[in-house]
Length: 448
Image 1: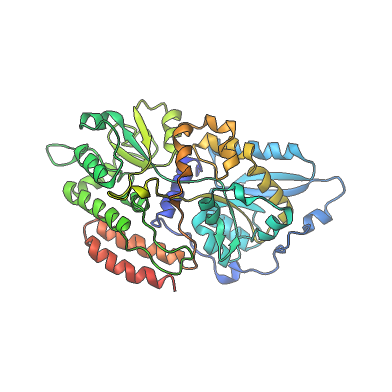
Image 2: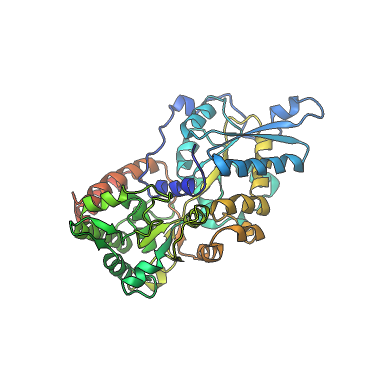
């Protein structure tokens, strides 16, 4: 089972950090298979051929399981009861590659979900259908979406997907651990952050770590982009035509991770990273063994659902020392829904999609999972009050300094190169300076 609550949304962030495994690509022949559904938003064949009075079937496959899958099924049930033209049939398929192959072969769903980082790949391979004609035909108001989230579904000037949520890291902190180390409030700047994570780290007599001060759990791969973008970095310019990676924010993130790993030892950090399961009662933050944690608001939902007794606070990520104008910076990503290029019922898929993204259904669905909706109207819905810590998290989405990484054709190559080089630095095999020199060369090549 693959839960698409905090775990799924957080895995989006891991993907956005560009250090997760990119899905295996289908061949061009599969990805661009001809003979599928028309790209036109006109009435589909399944509608014109169905018997009079019979509802037109819409198949929706989703990655969620458990309570999250049940929540989506309730939205499907509500939609089916709200009109008499379509009947949506949902199916949990927690296998991204299986869904992709089925779509490429013309045997997949009409509508499905994924992560925003797949948009360039799915656009180029003919997996996802452009939504622009449908949006224009119905006058669908995309201005309700948070701009940075909406852009996550766009590639090469076309909108291939719509974002469900605004995924970004906030700073969780253990109030007792900070107080015991002499800190009355959480860090606001990069310099304050490093001071806190060093002084809250507790080391055993044998040199191993008892309490991890740093946000480097579950991994530095999870941490790096949160730090870099929190410090005001960007990796490419707005149209992804030029690399902007070598900047103060990125350098500061590299140095902070390198300095902490050098001071406390890579093996010791790896040991505590392996000591518990993420978003589980054995998770170091949930056992009181981590002082500072960068994570999404699903962590709050986990604490409540698992009845964890911990006194924690939430704040924005620290900004780069001396750069207060960058306060509220961060990297956003989104879970997405897209219509399959080989959909047999484009109109029906689009109608359900519009229903799902309307304020009340979207708020009802995402509040359960501790996710912030990607639309302003859903954020303002009374249902969002059911989301744990919504009063602390939702205001942080209003920062103009939140950014997403623009999509570009060779994004997967960019991801792979970045992950490989940073891994060497995390493990003290290369200096930040050596890493930056190599990355400027290999990352620039992916933009050409």
